[in-house]
Image 1 (cartoon, rainbow, N blue to C red):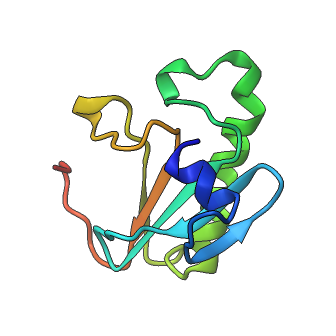
Image 2 (tube, one colour; image 1 turned 30 degrees about the horizontal axis):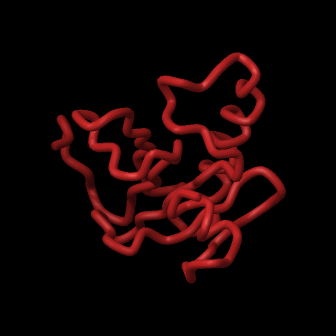
Image 3 (tube, rainbow, N blue to C red; image 1 turned 90 degrees about the vertical axis):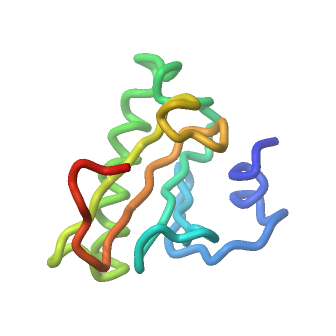
Length: 112
């Protein structure tokens, strides 16, 4: 099981801000912004680059949930960034597809 599967299964504690039968959202333990929440599908998909057409509905749900979570944590009006890392050079550190919601301050562009 990946770290995120263990969090979703409540085997590892996390500050969960939203969950349903398909995704779980929780605060990042090493936040890169005042608001840093991860939205993780319960289905273990290694990374975006290996998602298939069968995952289309889940991927849509992931993004729509990210928008809902952004509203719940209060960054929808001021703005936020959604990030999906893919592979080592993309910054992926956990081999389980997830979306970062970053907000609570002005974010620079280009990133990193």
